[in-house]
Image (cartoon, rainbow, N blue to C red):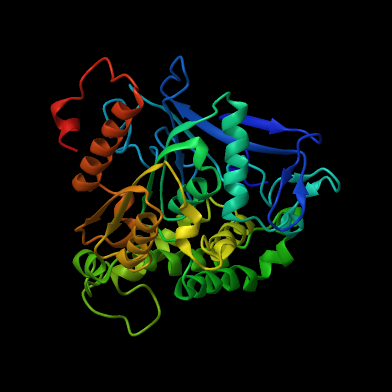
Length: 392
């Protein structure tokens, strides 16, 4: 089985007597959720921060990924003296339900068949992911989270937390996200899923049983998705029409252009760290997300009478989750009488900006969390951040 299904790290297991109920109308048992923690939980357990990862992320938000060997995907944001300061906060980050980094997903062994679940795993939703996270948080002895933070699909989880369990969430920071998946975004995901399923090695989802992997299909899916994470401006600035290791075009179908070579590299490296069936499941979870649907289509209904504090962030060149999506959340929160601040950050980097070095994002996060922590009476860190960290 692919090594990404067996990473080192913390694991919370739930037995047959503690099934996880799913929006699909069924349940999973036994099941497990993989997670990492950073910092220390304070005496009254009031300083816990839950970080929710994006589509192909993982629980290694601020520590080395054991599969790839790369630094944590948000190590600029989370750590001692960083905006999410682990000298002050106890940070939890878990792998989502349906993922492939230890939490129950399609590569997990089905106890009934003793084979990988494959497509026999029930479809999971953002609501299911959050339900699993809640059980983890409660199992850690935490009854209330100081903050829930995340971008993109992680931002969807943040909004779901605020809507489903407002009494457990003191503050929320949804970044580069929206209250539902647009038809355009669903369309891109469907292209990716069809690429995976068209690969002969996919074997109707049973490739692990046959020691095969649909790497070509998954690579194409990643290539298509990666385009949506960047802006036209960032692509032009980084690549333009520059040729790759040649002085003229070859009049063939090799990677003549740098952008072609870059996308192929992205696709090839992705298949080494992610499971193809997990890609199907997590993209579907995003597609099904619609926060207003249970409230007769009225988004404000999801936040009525909430006491949670919100800081919503978007980026000017993000066309996957444009600022208009964030503004719809802000308008709904205003209609519900919520405490909300909003920042649109000027960036040329598109959707991926939330994962990159964006000083205004760091400054906004730091300021919001310090204000909220002071309001909750969470003691400040023992040491002040360095001058460089303070400028982030």
